Length: 115
Image (cartoon, rainbow, N blue to C red; front, side, top):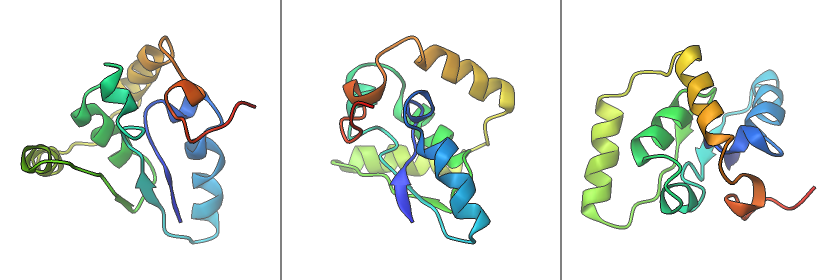
């Protein structure tokens, strides 16, 4: 199953909280996408690409699909992958506390609808 996984997601209609555990329980593969919320996270200066990728890779997913527009972006993603270390619970808590203070929901994840 392919679904959004990013550091804004836990704050509104969360795929991470609502979908991932159910998919894992059914033995389904999980492919994370929209790690940068179609560019909205970096465009709004909420987090860096490295933070977006590291957060997504630290979730209960099997793989991450990350779009790129330039060779430089591809090289940045490859470096992030090569140097990846899973986020600790404390790092994740700190990052989510920070991202909760900014815009969330459809303001950033425009593929989610108002509840």
